[in-house]
Image (cartoon, rainbow, N blue to C red; front, side):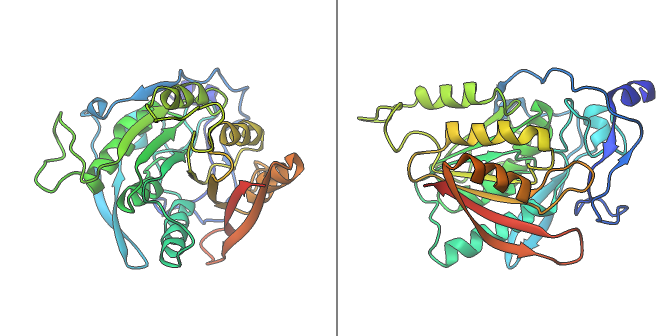
Length: 310
């Protein structure tokens, strides 16, 4: 297995709240120069009943300025047989860790709701690169009508996202280990795995088959997702174009919005919030505004941005 890991080019990407051994400076620690990325895994919908029973899942509370959510923890080596790695390009994109940007995003979303700047009630929400899914879970608690969770790996959804949604949203009388899922919300909750270059095929297919009265899904402004959420998704500069094109394909026009939390720069990989915003500005279809900057010393500067169609 060690030889297999070396071939795939495993490496440390940046610090997270779950990683106490890292300094938080965001530097890479390559074990070896990575080879070209392999083909991405197939795009699939993961059903709640497909939650993994073979991987140990533990849960602990996380306090976000007075809001308490539950975060799960699983062992990366149990799920992928990778040890001491934040990601393996093309195989595993870090979805099992709880990154700081996810916590930043929930805090900002809560503040936006409290200030009357954001309303989730009745909205369709997509969380890209969801991992633990805390921003999407918050959207559920705030009354979203639809919440779709997307991650690169089906294994992340099966072993972490679905269990974490269950931990936060299952009806109190229902045990976590059950084949029947009854969430404490009326929202439609679904889970999708796939690469950003392809996953729109199943996301848009889902939308095309939803029965929306008097709605032409090719033209109507209510087609697509009203709110797209993403945290720590812009670290790889090579993936930014696919991510941006996916957003444009899936976001409701003209009133859709995106909330993005990320580090200003990811040293060593070239990505970051400013690289992504530069791409958005060059394209010219969307306007971007800085909502918050976080410089708490735990990592390099982090930001939360809001995007909308012009």
